[in-house]
Length: 353
Ligand SMILES: C[S@@+](CC[C@H](N)C(=O)[O-])C[C@H]1O[C@@H](n2cnc3c(N)ncnc32)[C@H](O)[C@@H]1O
Image (cartoon, rainbow, N blue to C red; front, top):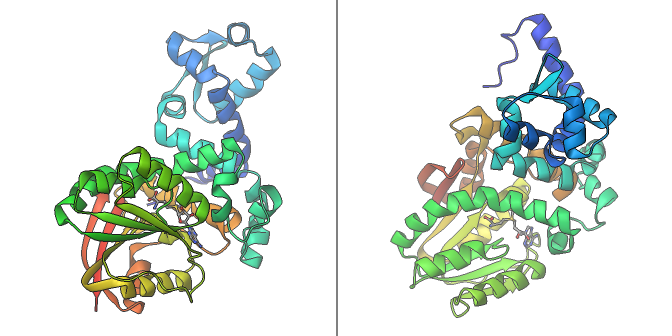
């Protein structure tokens, strides 16, 4: 994975330049996509001159030259006989949903804030968030108040990955028939609504910030499951606040990665205390050491700086081995692990030790 030593010196130096110019290439690729150049070249299926691209899209010759020459350098465009055509890389930048979601998240949510990554790492606080969108301690209480484009890209990113895993998880969890489920970080109620619709004996209590709860309860009502979805506003970072008790399961999806190890252990301990005797904790996470391809590991590892600069300054995308030790420290044990759900999520099922 990520082998950097098998390259010739020249190839390695070129790779190093790709990193050095990464932010530049990112922006030109985004504009080639958003201003229609990739689409035009894909639709035409033939190579096109700068003049024709300029005339068709209403962009200046200078704009087309700047963007297409950069597109050529990144391998997204081919330049032959003074005409451009689209390559496989350009095709994925245009068509692939995961690439689109990642690019929008990185531009709208992360790009400006990542400038302050050094400050965030030194102070363990989301300095990027503070310099751009809000002075709040973390991004979570103000998720629903982010500027509309930023909010859309944040939720599209979050839901793109969890939705893909949910399809299989709904099937797995409805068969388990858990009756009372507690869901810390239930967000806009996607899981609570889906599982209560699929499994008539299941009810869910969401724990989250008020902004997310307001949306979740509206969604539950829209879907006719409001009698089995309730919610409680809570700051999960406050270790002194116990969770409500008497649950058969605690469900935490794409959630614990929003916290530092000490917060994760506290949340797991409080989850354990919320369980009935035979209750289970269900953890759903995309662990980067459980990915079947390096594409998944690359995306996950490079999502971590978002957590540092924008989200909270303390969390990251973890490895499964790290979670095994958090689970152990909280007085739980892993009894089952299902890997490869959706785009590479793992369901880790834990019981009291
Ligand atoms: C990444 S989202 C998880 C979304 C959802 N579970 C899924 O699978 O798509 C994290 C959720 O945790 C909530 N959250 C993060 N920190 C929190 C805190 N300190 N107190 C309450 N909720 C918090 C956020 O508001 C958000 O809804």
